[in-house]
Image (cartoon, rainbow, N blue to C red; front, side, top):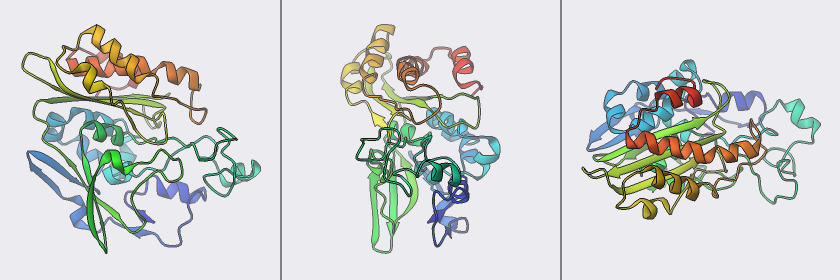
Length: 311
């Protein structure tokens, strides 16, 4: 297995969730820290989340991405964690993210060493949930990733990097390294990321919303991308969002309509913190908060209430 910052892999190895025979460290590969700006922005996979949060140009062009990076874990972990690692973050589940002895006591689970998905015992596939913060936002920004192996390289949309499968959640092949992330020119676009969790730091998302909107000078929507996070085994785009909003002003009525369109897609299961029914109900207000943020409303009070931090 590849190790970047190690903030996900090392704890998983300690719990014997992942037991690679060989671990390949990427910290010494200087090219993986490259940063290029030419209208678009390219970030090497080893770019730390802390450096992203401190990047004033990235904050100006992609505020939603900086908001997502700033809400990952704690400052200590963000100093080590990388954008490539957060994109490839292992899916999580109440029945999987436990000590070896705890998992052994329930005869393990489908994701590791067992045969049953304890979230839904009749499910033919693992239902562990995608808990990456940056992936939904990068998907909303229309970003692409470059994957390199000894056989060559290929570039795919961030959306195509994921499967809706708790075990086989990445389309990256075992012989490929995620080298960098390219974000297209964001001129005219505004973005926001909202995350639901119990504490104001450290915790993974139990629901999240990423929004990127291109507005004309009059404030009408020319394009809009809306992505839900932490409610499935992959980030979920809301494909009808653009057609609903195209050519319209982001009024309260339109925002409510978009929240209604997103609501049926998110189907949280009983595999993370909080009750799944409440997480489901929170999809609507999270979408509304994110869209109001993009509209330019003062969301400081709501942000403190939901995120418990000033971004």
